[in-house]
Picture 1 (tube, rainbow, N blue to C red):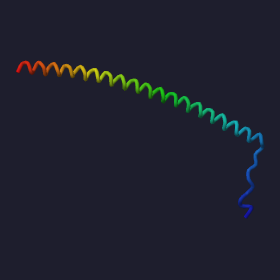
Picture 2 (tube, rainbow, N blue to C red; picture 1 turned 60 degrees about the vertical axis):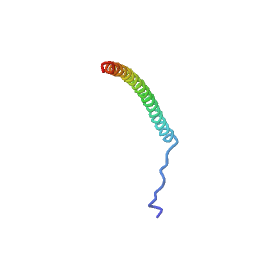
Picture 3 (cartoon, rainbow, N blue to C red; picture 1 turned 135 degrees about the horizontal axis):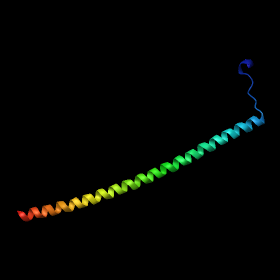
Length: 81
């Protein structure tokens, strides 16, 4: 029965150190990439918000302008009756 389990793998300290360094560099690269991605997403959110507010302001101006036109037309129509 003990022959089925086998002995656990053994590593030298230098192998452990090398593996840890590889993992550390990989995790640092991933962290850096995620920070850049987060910053880009934040920039896009801010850009979208700015664009949305600008479009809403333009739409409101157009609505206000058309509202005045409608009011003037109704006043003219009432006078002609």
